[in-house]
Length: 257
Ligand code: ADP
Image 1 (cartoon, protein in one colour):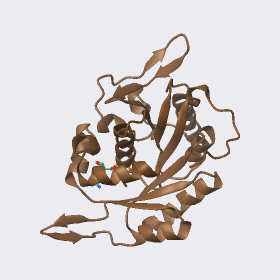
Image 2 (cartoon, protein in one colour):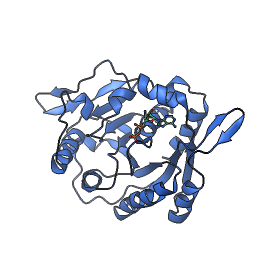
Image 3 (cartoon, helix red, strand yellow):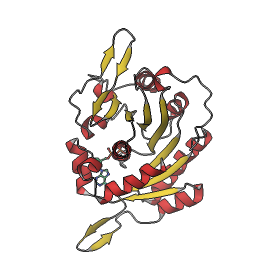
Image 4 (cartoon, helix red, strand yellow):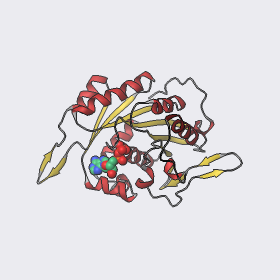
């Protein structure tokens, strides 16, 4: 998709990045970080140069979901820039790699931290920077979208009817900022047991969203113990099981972004 019109000056650290993709959700715990990390490794597996920026300052998940040898960000003292850490060929920055974080921060402070981490990082040349957005559609998210020229947004949700209202908010935020929402990922949509498929949270709200807002793609992710276990073990599922059903879904999502 074409880059949206971006009013501000592009921060130096972001100038060599071709595509910046936001992975967003309107609530916490729906699987946003799981999708961001697996999408990043899928794109890397397709041969792209990829970075992940974990903008979830209050609850950074990246340090649990990957296991880089170097778990602390390094500063370049002369240029005063941040050198991202790297794991299996993907560059990454997270507040969780910044040493002792503060548990309590007011909104403007959070925005400042995100801005600094994102724009003073030496990302180098990247085909994709995947941003794991903080959940919700408040000031922090808006500021982030204004600092960074997003190429596209992927919205992660769960199948409940309730989630529909929140997703609509997210889609509206991106549409106001002229960022195209290219896909909705409906996470935890079903599980298989005893040869049957169960839909514990109901069905149909994802397709309602894509129809109503004209979003081109909808992907379903099942509830899978391996997805949760791989998240906890620091080895993304698409890396651990590159031929599996989940990896296949992410391949399809990767082609869209
Ligand atoms: P968010 O970023 O939206 O807060 P996470 O990606 O951190 O959500 O996911 C929350 C928890 O749920 C994590 O422990 C993750 O491993 C688990 N999880 C996410 N999606 C699935 C799934 N489809 N099946 C099983 N566990 C999942």
